[in-house]
Image (cartoon, rainbow, N blue to C red; front, side, top):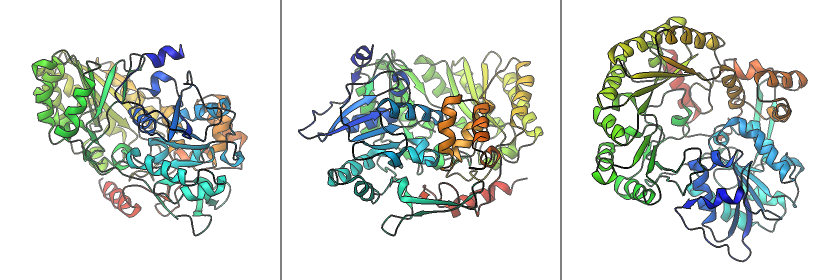
Length: 536
């Protein structure tokens, strides 16, 4: 089975044969192959590592792996989803490596990690990693490997101290965390001595050649798809949005030098193209990209596009997608309440939302999916009622167009202006309110699990004390009940669940990630927060 999975791959890069003395490296994705190989981030990092002559790279997934080295020196993880932490621990045990970095020695590989979850807030997982790469891998990976080469034969503690000097490399064991008390907030996070940087800054790649798939396979969760990153970050800066704030500034791939060559490269191995980005249609040359994809020679291409900004849904866009075998389009509206859209900085009106639906139908699309949210700071039940009214207006304006509202609960995320807000405990009732009032109107509501949102908030705002809880819950299961059981078992050793999930935090308190610098300083985030709370 394993050999068949790897044999099905069509590579869009040429792996470099390792040189004599190459560093034996394992690059893992803590989930099944079909999920991991669909991650563009994992693909690109793997190709970057496999293109170096000084590395011998083996891939590892939960259900399969390439031949593994007997004595790996480096073990890397790409973490895209919070609950995959379970598989990080499982794979460490599979490789007979101590789960906690404190118990590893020179016989064990240096365990490193990266990806959006770890860049946002690595602290709940910090004790499982020797080092964490914060930010974009385009330059950081090479800096990391080159710095490791300089201390490859040194003692482990010397290796870690040296790597901690590289911008963007965070070595958790070299930072000491203190708390006001065992169940209270953090008091400080400081380096163990003056030679270690007091802050680690997320690294940002500023080029105009963005990522594209390095492998296409029918065994991927999105079968035979070739992915092209059109934009990175989002200029809208909705105040809850990690995808915007953590990845600033907004960057666009060059149409002539990056996008078109990448698409043409992908079309040599598949007819399915996916355009990725938080705000694809805000690429300054998007119209020209549409014209290119509308050319007759691409009429057999199946085109998928990530969520698009609502007021950029034109009839032309809908027609192009419909001709390229796409039946639906997704827009993020968050709420039908004008007040809430002002609070979150969603520059959008109901009229624009309805016009997007009209354009989608006129262009030949059959389905329109909208993303909404409950529990937004400042929300009242009347705001949720306005979402129901908005959906009814859309349905009236576009009879025959299938409408779906996917709805999540607000979850605070690090490095955003809303990181200080807790989850609204009324959110679960409001999801049920939407379900009751929309399904009776023939509108399909797809609510994200409220309980999953609670767990997500716990991990997104967690500190290092949570690592013991995560080890326990791994054996209990990934339900809220399991986490509550683990909190009960650890009572007195860390704050209650409510502290992490529901509490509104003071802008004066030390945050678990205060020593990790994102794209914007805290003072700027506070200003954005103050603007949001000025709306009534």
